[in-house]
Image (tube, rainbow, N blue to C red; front, side, top):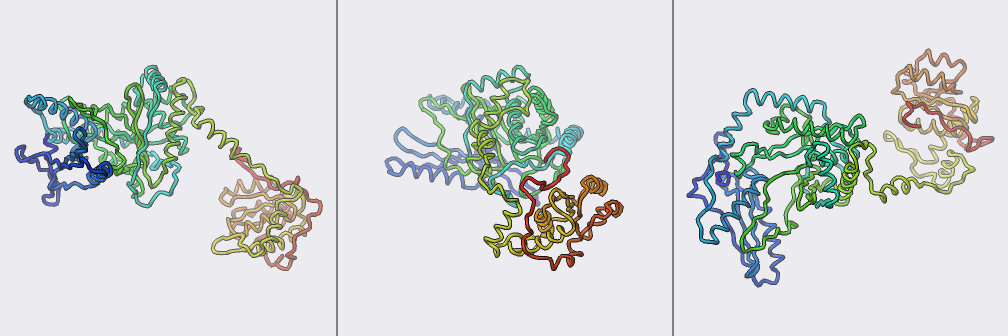
Length: 574
């Protein structure tokens, strides 16, 4: 394979490939003998870790190397490391199959049984470049530009830690295994709906990602082997491309309808897979950030690649423990699933800078539950699929909502604040725009305004409109209204003047509290209609209550059953 004899150097500032002659190339194999050593297992892990973490020299090579460690007379560990620029997941399967054939032949004293290669990777590279130039490139690039237009730039998954300003590629792995019954159910669902198992699993993964992020429009990346021609199936090299699959969960689809959407999008993507992902990014031109990858941050893979475990006559071959491997996370979360011995198995690779192990375990549990629900019937609405296990659902719905607590039911809200002010008068109660008020100061300011409102006739059931920017004055105003015995009517200064005017007329306030600049927002005509209703500028009119008492107003006839506030909503809250 010429790819394994290729190195890369710069010529005139541009990278070029150099393919070494076959006669000058040998497989670099380092041998270690740990037989009889007491710490052989520990030393083996150290050697493997060293191999995994040693960088390649792209200019001098080699870009494939081996390490053979003798542990005993009948036990060896073989590690082969290839650079991704000359190999991919499919290549590992090709390598394993050819090693198996060569080993079997040489063990029996036979000649090399492998046929010569009709084409090499360089031939494919030339062919691909010609193929994607011109009309094919233009048409496929236009498809991706159209399909990904307006897609969300970031999938907002809940993370355990804030996203770093620059991507941290340290990662970790977590295994996944679905039982035989669920695997059979998902395969049966796929047959009924005319989807592949990949499409069904992707749909389930999309449901979980949508629920976690709160987004109905999301993009999931998926690698494609990109080996659509028989001539290149047996080559080692980097062929893989990445597709950005946009999944639409809007409009309350059923499971069957979602599967149809995913099927249609996946088939379209495969028909437009020749454009390298980097050129798709150039065509779509998403906002670029060092904090996350462009177009998508979560991937799903289900590769139908040849098996990558060699079969060597006379030997029992087992995969080595990969605990020593340094995992690099290219994306926030990458899920890879495939079928093995009647079960869906795989793993999740995640960015350790964002997620803890327990969180990813929980997300994978959600996926298992959603897939179980999907397998139960394609007619079920996606929004109704249960995701949480019963214990977690009880915790969220019942446990965290069990907020009953004993409190002095005979007191009003503002009296609880007054009691706190007596307990810790010097403690900081409020910080706003660099201004800090203690409990005593905040209580005194609210009391002076409250006494003034009482003088204006505010009492139980009286409404006081409050149109104030977020500030210390806003908190003072709300407390003052409650202390006076009234109910506050919040008016958002960002609302249109027509809406503010309607709320003023409809609530019939006994007084209006605002700030000078906001009077124009309220509308002079609307305020004028409130004949006889005092409109107080919390800053400009403060002198009017500056000498009022700082003592707590007498509660009088006010009870906890009286009105606290009146809020106008769109009907979605309140």
